[in-house]
Image 1 (tube, protein in one colour):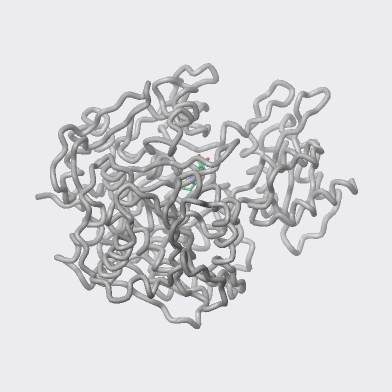
Image 2 (image 1 turned 45 degrees about the vertical axis):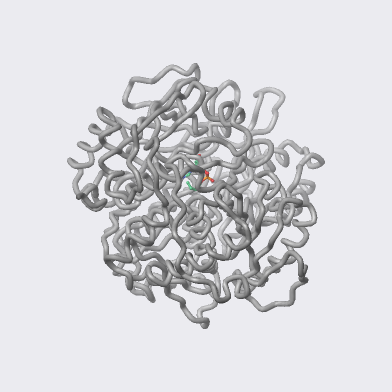
Length: 637
Ligand code: WT7
């Protein structure tokens, strides 16, 4: 029988052949890969879909449990191999390692606790925890018994948490007393207590003791984690799931309205995350892989838990932040564990690039083999910095484009295997069929083109619905261009068929009748040597229809001058043209960001338009105080 590693593509020719094969014979292509997993019964058909409904089913009728593939399977081969290396927030605290056997035991034990409290297949369990091993254990324990986990990032407010719990009607919540983030201690249980005042569906709240801080206690509802698992067996047979049974719900913010609970299912998600993990990162069995994301996001689900574990990998999980106790923390961790694959976000890269380079020079980064980036388009300056200072001009950088909705990476180079190109995500994964459309929805046949990115054919890990709202799922993703999946991003294609994601198509601004993407303008501004980061939005203009406003962060040691603002304008003029020159440039000390590090353009658009009375809810921002600062400097202008 073949092993999943037999499907690791090792050369550009093998990659091209796989791309071709996956398009010509998608069913046999994915069927053969899926056969390397452990199934209780085989599928009747590989793929069944109709995107006019829309409906997508993979490995139809197949029976499995994903945790048997992530855990049990490896116990026969390498029970003592490390599954997790956990690095605490504070360097002085002890690292905790979990071998595959230890992780298996902990998961089964916790799963038995869930069963004892009446949690069964199909129930929803909300997890609101810091980045500690118990978060991974809780996630896998749910999957073990077929409960649907809904992880909510532990940086969200009580209002946001309550909305997510109520939307999914969760029965049980798992949290901790508090969490450590840098020099802050966050009272998670306190936030939970406030949220639960509005959540009738929650019957029990399991609390892990992380900080030993004082907490309020509801005897009828709250149970300490250690009491919950006390004396329980670490034998827990896996609940047999249908390939299309839901595995988890994960919320993603819509461009408008309430968050969307994306539903991912068991079979296709497992096969696709494992396959893309192995191929994009070129993971080898002895490697130490580190993704700096939080498990509260899809990157954490797919490329910190399910993908790596399903191929028996060793991963580092980090509780803290890149700036604590100082900005060398990431490089110290890379050196300490001899990290081979390092996967982070452009926003982190830009913050790290702001620091003196001598911080990096003190660390031995020679173990690194692959660098990765995800979450937003990476600007050239950040790409170059990553390549020069971390990659030492010698490492492949995988720029992975995907979404909460896609479950796994759709466009990326394969590290060291397929061609890479700075700031380009490059080529679709095998099995992913991309089309660029013009504004009228017609497929652009020219190779070199810019357009709206769409996907023509199902891949195994596409989200199957929005929890409780299939109609919205249809409207958002399948109605703009019938028969195609519409991710909401634009892209540029070069003559070799490489894709560069240009940003959300909803961030296009029409200035004097010209379509202008804000992302390329930001890239131009960021090219200025004094600029750290910028955001450009449109605002109404009497003559042009729309004009542009740029919010710009300068390096700490730069002194503001009107000349500097002129230079920034010139930079845009030089790179894009006079039409793209911002009408207004405001120097700011920060940009309003979501807790996942995305710039909240909606708020910047309101600020630029002077609509400060209709900013909406800014409480879920990472840095609401910055909005006040911007309002004040606008009033001085
Ligand atoms: C949106 C999805 C995928 C996990 C993290 C984000 C943007 C994501 C890239 C990239 C350019 C990217 C897109 C996408 N995005 N990766 N490599 N290059 N843009 O997941 O929160 O669901 O956001 O992030 O605009 O649509 P998400």
